[in-house]
Length: 130
Image 1 (cartoon, rainbow, N blue to C red):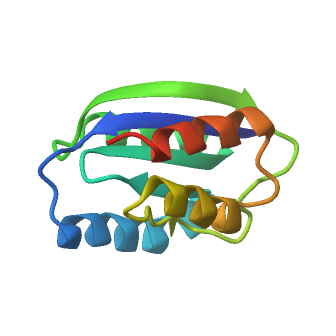
Image 2 (spheres, helix red, strand yellow):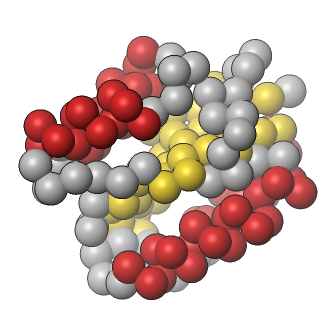
């Protein structure tokens, strides 16, 4: 059974190198576990979409919860899905531009077309926070 999790967390003191390290680790480890998704970081918070088999996602969420690099982890959405929104992304970083208008344009361009409308709305709302 495929599932999709969307969570937010707080990580105000991560360097660009630490964020890149998280992405590299995800890109290396996720394919063997059948996990796909995307990650946004606005300099203070992560918003991450994870897709895969329920058991793998539960295991990953336990590791994420115990990761000292971020706190305040809150699952915004958890659902069973028929198809992945990010089938080709082991973990894609979606960059957030400086201006809010540019952020919206970039996200409209970069977010996968298969995202459901509610998930897309949550991601767009996250992107305009600062």
